[in-house]
Amino acid sequence: MMMMMMDGRDSPARPTVCVTGSTGYIGSWLVRSLLQRGYRVHATARDTDKAAKLLLSSSSSSSSSSSEGSDRLSVFRADLREEGSFDEAVRGCVALFHVAASMDFDASAQQNIGLCLSKLLTEEKAFEFAEAKGIELVSIVPPTVAGPFLTPSVPASVRVLLSPITGDPVLYPVLVSVNSRLGSVPLAHIEDICDAHIFLMENADAKGRYLCSPGSYSIPQLADLMSSEYPSFSSERFRLEFHDSIPSVISSNRLKSLGFEFKHDVREIVKQSVNCCMNCGFLS
Image 1 (cartoon, rainbow, N blue to C red):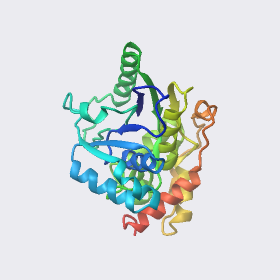
Image 2: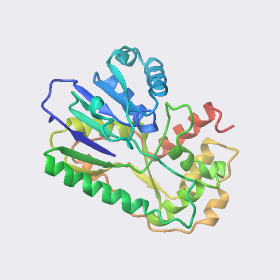
Image 3: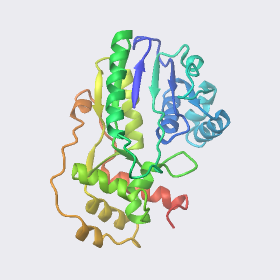
């Protein structure tokens, strides 16, 4: 996820910013957070009717202050595959939050996708472009993001986290893969992720890339937390299936050194994810 300061950070208080991917998990929450703080928001989406319905309903259903912010929201049609389609949306904006992303879980095991490599190369090229054009660019590297959500369907990352409960044959291997590579599963609460985006945009000292996670748990540890919130789920087999490992250190010290504070720990992330999915009927 990337953020470009297009006209610097010295613009008038609460100026106009652009958010791509506004119908997604992070995008929709970020739009609401920005409106709550008084910003004018240009939200982009491929389907403007869908975006307007989601963003206006989430705005009016929260607090009176964010409800009043609906007059500061404008929705623009834009598609990453169509060059020039973002021109109108970014016009007059002091910053761009690029959180749009597509995820394909239907690729075959035989395909050489190179997902991690593609993300690394994309980030490198983005920083090269920003330096050449004199643009201030910040990259935020999120882990598995979970917690409550505004979208009508359960976000993929929340379904990945809760896959030990659901037994999803496609998403559970994703969680296992992360645990195998890192020795644990780093997590972040959706509110903290969006707060970090805004915090870094407003901080004149922010530059480069930032990891954003308050902590990580192994799958057996996560399963134990899930069983405490969802009693019909047993975590016993996960303790037997996974051996103890030394987790990688996922440090957010660079972000915290600027003064950022996380509001939610891993236990709270799991609790809110389970409760939200029970309330919406995803977990019965």
